[in-house]
Length: 356
Image (tube, rainbow, N blue to C red; front, side, top):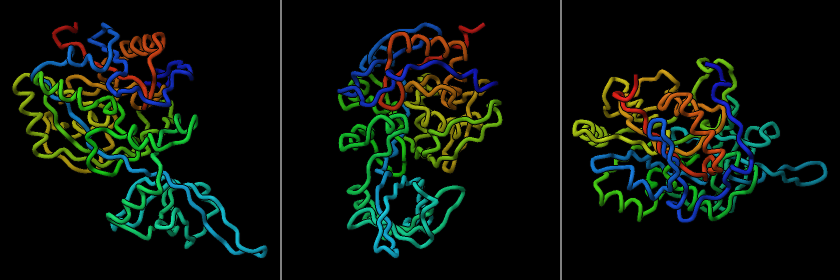
């Protein structure tokens, strides 16, 4: 498989910089096998049925983008320089974080960066191109100071068009977000609001929560032409015993298991690599490409993805490469809104009995 197999032309004006309001009013492209239907997210009630189970990622996005200053004394007096940091992952003690820092080359070991009156960090080292920052706070105190000083880490294709603002603290978070740790949102889930969840529950759709902390690596480009040589980033996730039991029960009863978002799909397929889902916890770097055997997933709700990305490979594995080309051609022609704040798709693979 070549990287070019997953490319398509996307007009820049189709990249959404704000979400639909209300969330559930976004458009929904339903691909039922090879048949394409133009709907809205509220029409999920027409496509889901009693006994279906939605698998939802309950990670919470942290306001990981920080702007601060480092101070030095020079021959000309005190000098301050701006430092931008995006937190990536906490280390063992909770006060030390890996981070993307700009400009990293200008920092010296031991220098302090002041982000607010309450929050500051010392630059300790560089590991694999990332800075290690030791903060003055940990635990709840750190969370409170970060909430006050930080901005939501919008994806690069949105950040290039506008800066994050206060509205993103709500917009870039799911209504069920619980476990803090993600630096990117599980964006298909952003389309759900309380009325839609209530309507689905009333018709007999059930929900299972799993946790996968989405990392900044989700935005890393594929740099090899032979996609089998690409190394996936690892992200921490957990499928509890309760979640595994709920999914197993749905399968046994003949219901469909439908992850909302590629993060939830990658996690349950990691936990299902033995042939059936089981409780699981750890770092997953599962890379799903055409030819992958899905053991848990029956359909997928997801947003529209970047050309030449690993997520284009994932949806192609589920639906077939030609079907995905047709879906994306239709989405561009009909001016669906793309990426994190864009519209959604419900991808229902052909039933095995429907395939030759």
